[in-house]
Amino acid sequence: MVYLHHRDERLLSVLAHKLGLVAGELKPQEVSNAMWALASLEHMPPNTLAALSARALQVVHQLKEQELSNIMWAAGRLRGVEHSLLVALGVSNIVWAMGQLQHQDTGFLRAVAHRFSHRMHAFDTQGVSNIVWAMGQLQHQDTGFLRAVAHRFSHRMQAFDTQALANLAQGVGALGWREPPLGHAILSEAALRLAGDWTSPNNLANLAWAAAVLGLRNDSFDHALAAVLATRVSSLEAGPLAVLLWSQAHLQAQGQGGPAGQQVMDAVERAAWAWLPRHTPQANLTAVRVWYGCASTHWS
Image 1 (tube, rainbow, N blue to C red):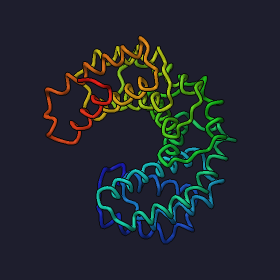
Image 2: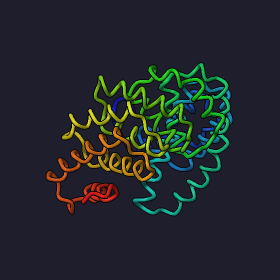
Image 3: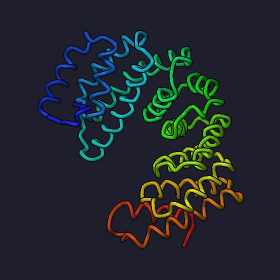
C-alpha cells in the first residue's frame, strides 16, 4: 500500500487491529516494517501503537541499524500526527493515549540511545539524522547519545546530504543541545551546500531556526543564506518566511547581530515585502504569521 500510494481505510483498520493483537509475536524486522508502513500511511490506532512500542522495547537489542532508524522515524512521525489530531479534534482519549505512549517510549528510547551510542559506526548518515530528528520530535534528552553523535560526525558533515543535514539541525535544535562545535560544523557544511546548490525553503528555514534556538551565529552560513535569499525572493512562502523572520529577530534580541547577520536580516526583509503584495493579510492564518514575524523584528 505504501509503495502503491493506495489507501483502503477499511483494510487499514483491519490490518492495524490485527497487528495490535499479534504484536507480541512479531519478529524484529516485522515490528520495524509495521511501524514504518503505518506511520507512512498515517494510520496507527493508539492500542496498536502501544502494542508495537512494547514489542519494539522487547526486541530492541535484536534490531538492525536500519530497523532502528525506521522505528525512530515512525515514532517521531506518529507523535506529530497525534498532536495534529489532538489540536483539531480535542479528543480526550488521545491525551490519555499520548500519556501512556510517553511512558512506554521513555524506556524504548533509552534503550535505542544506549545501543546507538555504542554502535555509532554501523549507522549511515541518513539513519543518524532520522534518529536525532525523531528524538527531537519526542523531546527525549540523552546527553551521552548526543555526545556520541558529535564525536562521530562533527568532522564528517560532508557525508550528509542536504535534507539529512537539515533534519540533524532540526533535531539538535529541538533538543536545545548547546554544543557549539557540532552546531557550527552543521552550519559551515550547510554554507558550502548553499553556495553551490539550492535547497528547499523548508530546509533553509529549519537550518536558520536551529541556529537561532542554539544561539549560534556562523558568518559563512549567514553570507550563504543572504546570497540565496537575494536570488530566490519569489520562492519563499509564508511558513518558511515566518520561521526565517523569527530566527533573525531571536538572534538580534540576544545581541547576536553583526554585519553578516544584518545581511540576512536585509534579505529576509526584502523577501517579506515581496511576499506581502501577493497576499491579503486577512485571507488566512499564514498572513497573520508573517505579520507577527515582521512585528517581532521591530519593522514598521
